[in-house]
Image (cartoon, rainbow, N blue to C red; front, top):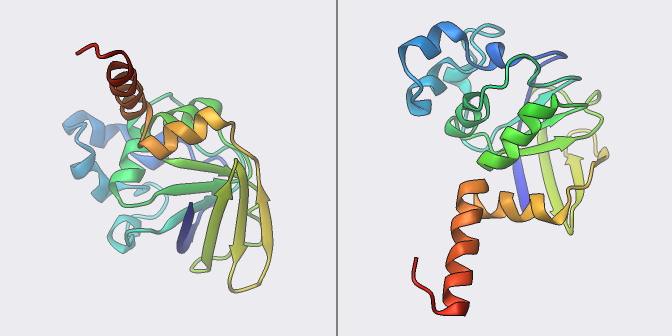
Length: 174
């Protein structure tokens, strides 16, 4: 699998309330509405500039704070398929995988706003190439089960697919 996108760079400690503020969640939990407010606490004009396929790039501790699943789904709803960060808060990391958002742990220090990044992974090995600098970064490998969940589009889709495969094999109808 390969992704190619424009880097949208943020710093350290981007918490889930920065990703989508609590004030916005009081009005709705519909990610198709909330995507208009993505990261507005950090950059009020950010959401309006997002293009499908953009890649979020952050420093340490991305997704710290509360364990809101909506933080991952709003990123996806905006058309962003992956987040690259030096480190992730564990809850956001799992929420990302469970919802089909690819979390890539790698050294993001050299990536600049607007750089074109090419992300490829095979058998769990992650590779990120920054076309501006030519730098090749190695991301932390994902276990096969996480890759399967991501390729299915998230945990619910993965379970449905597994159940359908099992039902087909056994002839049992769900």
